[in-house]
Structures are given as structure tokens and as C-alpha cells.
Image 1 (spheres, rainbow, N blue to C red):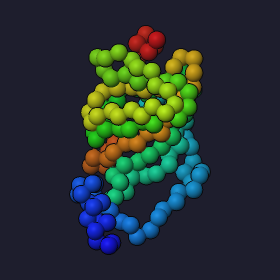
Image 2 (cartoon, rainbow, N blue to C red):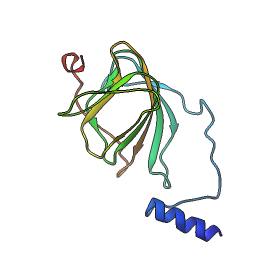
Image 3 (tube, one colour):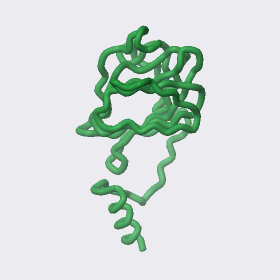
Length: 152
């Protein structure tokens, strides 16, 4: 039975190695929260790491809390990003397209190498869980800030 489950998991996950040997619980507060670096965020954002990448997932997960008016700089992800909006009201924008509002319960898929930014609206905070996928040990390529004129 264990072999059948492992084979099914390999089919779903492709070549990822799956280990069903142990359940891992990362306790709340296991990794300290940090302020978003000024090179990567405009305004006040707090990043709370939740799960580091490993050989099975090749992804990491973190909670990002944006104060009103705060946002990421333009950036891309080599293997894409999933955002799960948990609170507040935010915006996400793909380069060359209209900014879109995102709200609690929304799930946003950002494909690999798509240049974008995301953050809170000008008047509301926003929180999301961000899952990014690793390629050659890297999950993001940070670029230049989103200007105030472009943001508003």
C-alpha cells in the first residue's frame, strides 16, 4: 500500500521526492518575523517565515503583512508564486496590465518570470500568505521600486 501511495504522489508531483516518513510541525513563532527590506518594499511590510523549502516541496511559505500604502518593488519569480489573501484589501499588477484589487479569500497565481508587484491599497492594510518555488536555490528577482505616481 505504501508503494502505491508513493507512486501516486510521484505522479502528481512529477520528479519531486516525497517522504511520508514523518509529519513536521513548525510551531508558531519558530522563525522570527522581520521588517521588509527597503530594497524590496516601499512602506512598512512584515514578513513572517512559515516554512522553508526542502527537497520535497521546493517551495517556501511566508505571511506578509502590508501597512496601508506599502507594496513590493517590481519583481519576478523563476518558478511562479501563489498568494492567498487572508485580510484587508490589496492590489496586484502585472506589467503592462491594469492593477487588480484582491480581497480575503482570493488566490492569485503569478506565472514564472511575469513582472509584477503587490501590496496594500492606499487606505487599507493587507495580509497574504506567499508561496514561492525555488529554481537553482533562488525564488525571486527583485527589481526597481513602484513609483508613487504608478501606484496611485
